[in-house]
Image (cartoon, rainbow, N blue to C red):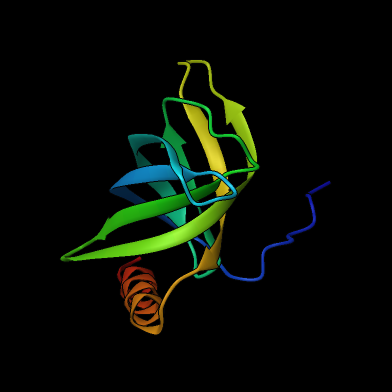
Length: 115
């Protein structure tokens, strides 16, 4: 029996490099790292990173989408470690400006047309 789809937005499989900074509740930087996206939607991403992120912290993501770099704030909603020790974390977007949203929508639309 297939699981119930709970996502509001369709995701496209897409590998993009990213960097991130983890912020505490006072917006102080605690940690930073690099990773990549595995899939992306208007509401969130699945990313692959090498160090665990505390779900209580906010992530500021800098993601390369084709020729554009976007900055988006998000929260980890789930994580799991794969057999290679890489961490796959689902991140829900919680804050982005209008220009970033338009860039993200255009990227997803173009990607869907190609596939």
